Amino acid sequence: MASDARVGIELPSRVLVWQEADGTRLGYRDPRALSEAYDLAGHEETLERMSSLLAALVAAAAGEPANPAA
Image 1 (tube, one colour):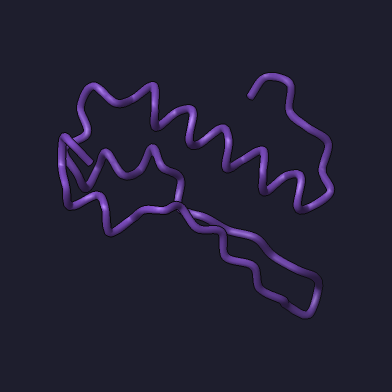
Image 2 (cartoon, one colour):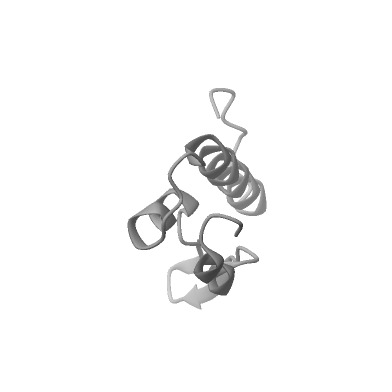
């Protein structure tokens, strides 16, 4: 937020959970996409770590095995 205070509207990161006829779905906005809308140059490593964490959390909630490469 120090680089572009407007990104604060996107934080904290959220996960959406909803039910469809064929099962439960989980979704979130990939934090790396924030750099397209906000001036976050120089924060790519942080955005990458946020993305990996959210992916791992969603996978765990979905009961999927952990991705060791993440």
